[in-house]
Image (cartoon, rainbow, N blue to C red):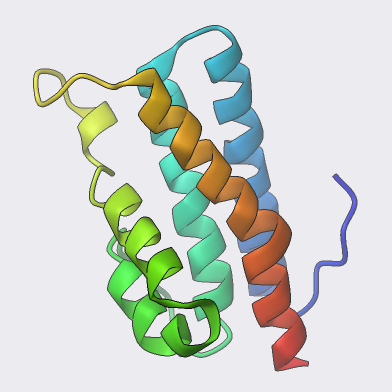
Length: 132
């Protein structure tokens, strides 16, 4: 996918890696491999969020729990609904990584894919554009 990767090297690296995980998730959905698809799409969401956060947070973000920090910095720009959707998705981060917790529902994976694409194609580029 061609797009303008605005910002610092760190932002670009987060976005490129987010795209790779999203592509992997889409391939896995095609083969109905739901747990790995969910793990990859959630990681893609996390990395997109970190791309935006790296414009306002100093230092490395070595956590998977970025939804609250994203809301703190961007809720006024993106709205409560999107922040809620991000938080709900990322609450499931460990679900596909450990057996026996809860079954992965294909529709949940597809919903997470829609969220990841929205972040990649609309939300994060708009936030980065606003930072120029």
